[in-house]
Length: 629
Image 1 (cartoon, rainbow, N blue to C red):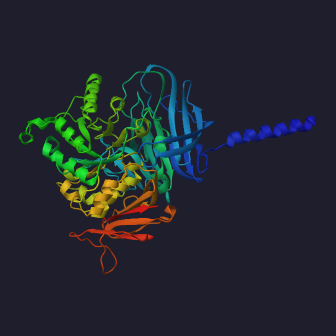
Image 2: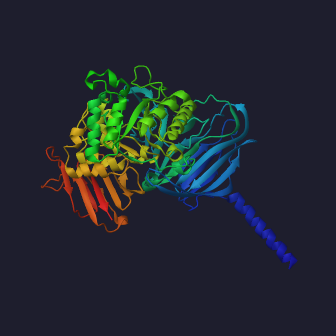
């Protein structure tokens, strides 16, 4: 018996040793896996390679990672706004030493991977140079954003990194040089129907954000400027790759899953909502008390909770027609009408010379506290802060200073002219939106947005809006300085397709109040936070149909990104039997069954409505369904 027991132990030990040598790191559901390849890793989805990471580590730690399982990660948390309010996730976490005082931490989630580098016992040293790189093979479809400090640009589909740099105001001129600098997120189709979206998450103090620089097929992660001397423990942000089918990408909450929990003890004062917004139609309207009144009154008529008083409100008393009225009077007027005012500030770290004000009121801690206390006392509900200076560490810390000070004074925050969200919407839940997108305000600035907007709009749900709230400022039925050629139903659909905790409506009061009463009621009842989000169908740049649930009501929106008619798939069996459906879509023709434009009466609004499996769409058209359970 003793000999048999000894033999059994030897067999078990040998088996365990073999398993250790051949172990493959896997996600909890086994769909995503890693395997070593040289000094890097291969990421697989259902056994098929989707992404090569040829190098990992930091300067001085270029060793082959030998990942060992450390723990299971489970999280269950609530959001105040976003694509899903109740979020759950689980991951298998692995780690590998990278020298004496550093290690690689790798998490495999069911919808992607996240990894970072952790240090202990640093002694006044600068952040080491990172060596992380991804390979994006030539010939593979990808949607990439040429980097700018405000992340405002298109995500055109291409199969090469050999893309000429766009220059000029709003990227309107093509240059001779090949672009090598790319902003997050980057989406690529790794194989037929399987995608990978590359981004990062959880920027904390003493960290800069990063972006991608490529040389051929190799895309390196390069953190922005960080001049601090680091002491003690320190780590990088999470490098994140969301992996799966397009529905997995769109529905993923991986960016917030790996971000720090909320720093606030009380979220009850944070209320997402729809905002009437002056700038799109009246660039300098916020220095005019009478124009502000029109937008407040529109908010009252439509039932919107917020109005934004944009740049130059500090010059209101200089405008003769205001008869001495100031920002205090404008705020008081909005409050008297039951509308909560938001006001604009220049961050005074990005665009300063020649920029609008107010400026230099938030940079010093004592000035910031004084200003936000004044806002709180007046009854201001939140602040829109504009013109930041990119991804550097000083800018990242400044943003966190602003959010922490705003929270002390119960002020909502909307960052403009700013980098994309990287998980702060969980850590600081009063950050309800961030621009970081080429949005509708560009109809003010450049003519080329007109022709490209429909395709761009059909790309954003698969790229920029995946990573966090996006203040695109949607829904323009009339024209700004440059016309739009999307249909009315396309524009209405954007209010559902684009997730933002503060959803600013672009158009002028006269335009909204001229729409059918059903459209006005829709805008007044539109949620800005969602219990659930589902991708119904779509492909980047061509078409998209998304369903979002708020309570017992589903909002389903679809758009055609092409300049020709197409039929969109609308399979909604997951909703179950509805009690009522209201449909908003472009007026159909009576000849061949395809929609046609009708400028005099563009709407087709039907209630009750029988749900089809497909819906024909005009060129650059769209639809919205409101489905009550």
